[in-house]
Length: 88
Image (cartoon, rainbow, N blue to C red):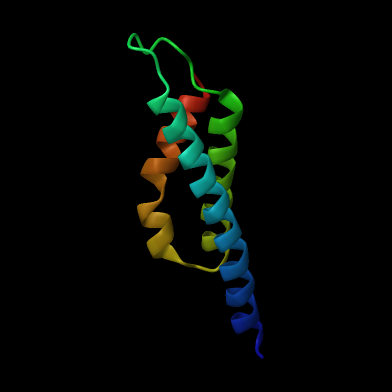
């Protein structure tokens, strides 16, 4: 197996784990939204948002290392929204 195939295999494994983690956090976020009171005054858990941001940021970094430009072109908007939320 050549080096690029091995790297792609590693990327697929790691990105799958990151996407699974991000999906789980999105489900937690959805549960939190569903549980909001009528006034929606509760603040979302910063740790949850930070974990989502880290997963998204790691996915972007891994894809950039392999030159997977499609992922990097479609990914910044969601990651930027998470970054803004984690900064208040």
